[in-house]
Length: 293
Image 1 (tube, rainbow, N blue to C red):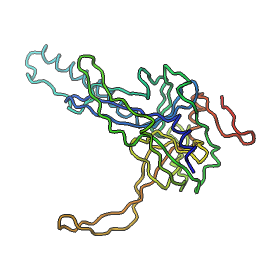
Image 2 (image 1 turned 90 degrees about the vertical axis):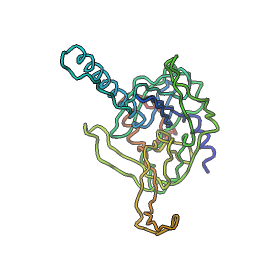
Image 3 (image 1 turned 135 degrees about the horizontal axis):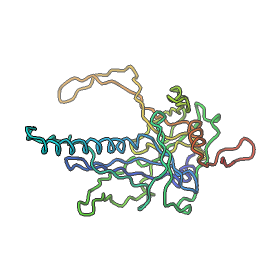
Image 4 (image 1 turned 120 degrees about the vertical axis):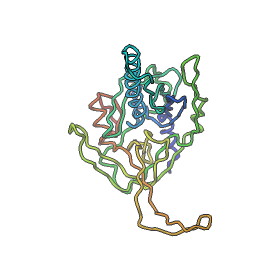
């Protein structure tokens, strides 16, 4: 049912790898997904993919303050002799890898309340993507709609940091072989009200299956491959069942949950793209498809 739709989605869905190096020398790696929207290289991903970058900026400022404080102590007679030590968890280096070597994401807009980020890949060659997404008519995304999501949930990537080059290294990613879809249906349309500036409705598509780690920022699409939402969260809904099981001779009460996916609704996606003047293809009311300028 989703074979052709998955083929289309695999064309415009790519992995994003986030590498961080911390004050204590530890290197961490996260992976998510993003959607290439048009031939100009504009992309869509989850806003929380930028959380570590925001922390990096904050930590950089704190490290500068600590350095200045320690230097001022040396110049003041009677100051404590011991240095102020930075937190070992501070991020000292940060890097994004956007699906291709040598590509950066510029003109980035992040709205963390919606959990959406939009930016433009540079440099970008339109021939890299054979099929671009079509955004579904928002009124057609209703409970009972069969949907599928895709992304890169099982990429076990470990970045390393090259001290001499002062750069991260990541292993080669078999992108075609690593994309992973899982299907379900739309269960509910969830509104969490407006953003603080009253600009965007925080509207989400709930699905009967969970999003997997690494699928954040990836598409939720219908059987025709049309974009219905963008995966951002998995919600754990308590079922009220508390069975008792035995582990190593001990009785343990387990809480049972239903894990459902949550994606930014295509209506909100369109509102954000319109606000940023980003072109996209959408389902037309009568003539098939039209391009929004």
